[in-house]
Structure formats: C-alpha cells, structure tokens
Length: 76
Image (cartoon, rainbow, N blue to C red; front, side):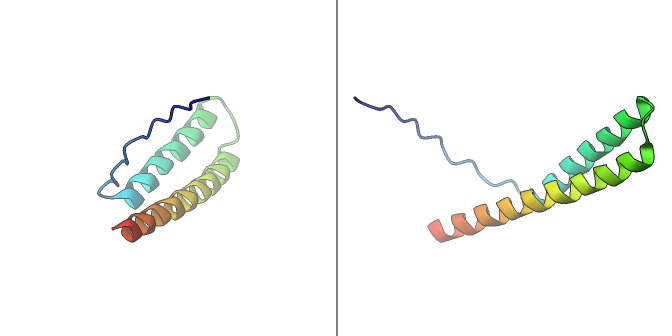
C-alpha cells in the first residue's frame, strides 16, 4: 500500500514571537475577565484565574518558541 505524505512548508518565525504571544494571551485573559463581569460572575476570582492562565499559556508559548528558534539555529 502506498502512503501519500504532504510536507508542509516551514513557516517563518515572526519578528517578535515572545511579545506577540504575550499580547495575545493578555487579550484572551482580558476577554475571560470581561465575559465574567458581563455575566455577573465573581470578578475577583476571574482576575486571579485569568492571570494564572495568562502566566501558564505565555510560559508554554515562550518555551515552544525558544525550542523552535534553537532548532532552526541548529539546522542552519
């Protein structure tokens, strides 16, 4: 049986990957807090949860960017 594989072209790394991911996750955390406030939820708890989610998501994203940049440096 023949298998078909499509190779995706390597995407280039953005000019500011760390800043972009931090801004993106800050916006998502703000949306989370905003939705909680609009629906009448506990805003204090949502700020704490949103901040924790921001830190976890940004840390993971930065780690992945660091690995990708390191890997690209090894290939060159």
